[in-house]
Length: 443
Image (cartoon, rainbow, N blue to C red; front, side, top):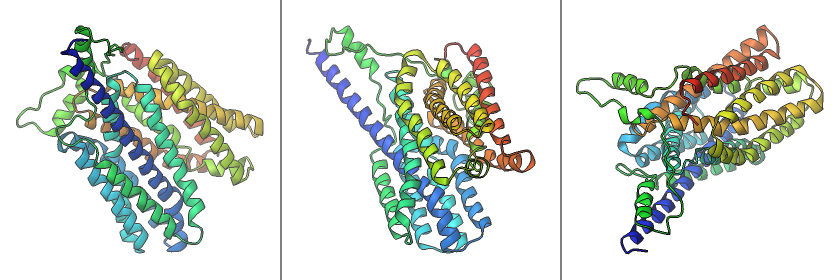
């Protein structure tokens, strides 16, 4: 080993270690924030505002809507700010807003302040996913392991969102003090983790393949892994430059044009979450009222389907890294569509279990494959803003879906939301085929 190559190999090892540590920070952020939001919005807040404070359902609905609107509408601006002010500053401010919201909710009993607190929680949540996905894209671009990294992040998201309501149900009992105390402790941890994120002028996920290539050229035997070259988007090198006197809107219109992605991606982003959002408000009613199952049995179905999803995420992610996302998305969309049609067409317990497990398995393929596909479309420049736009469009389906769901249930039949959700999945299958023909280089 030459004296010149040793420092390069050593620097590469240090950079890899820093990227791994950054990934751990991102995982913790997603897990704890989703835990807090899941426990608060799904379990604690409806009971606290409705039963404890006796507030009308309209006030509860407004509070929830303000959180979802703030979160989804501000994701792209939050990603844009993070690229300029630094991920540490933007994320810390956001997490402090959520911490403040939890403090207000736990201490104030006026409906107006509770609505303001929920809006602040939504605004504070806005930078979370754009920042995390932007940094995950950086980390993954050095190895090409998009599927594996996205799978691990989805485990954090699903685990936090699932454990939050369960733990809050178990803890609160007749007193909310312990429950709010746990949520406050989680948010304090989140703020501390955010302080370790890269600041302004620090890329966070550090490129390592250039140094590896030099080490190999110098004959460094410690560089055993060949660098993986992954091109997110061939538009990355031709992104528009800011022009003096031109507004931000013009710049981002040019930015979206430069991505060279099929225009059908934008409705696909909406439908991917709409298929889930259209089932969210009616799934419990359907299982209890139409299938005649107990809430405890419904919990068992949720746990079974969720377990299949979580257990399948990492194996699916690793396979996606090897063979690409195309096959997994196509199988996942079709399997999900068939499972949803099956759930709306049978009342036999055996088939219900089969379709629930198939739906869980399909999402284990769809979630990492879909995020991997998007990561390959995000340019090296303006990652935060582009990820924010993608996630805003995707999140809008969770806002519109529940509204459509209630109308379908009342006007057509309890099975109608399932058929609409299944149709969205099958339409995604068709859109994906069309997009791949337009961009055959996408893995």
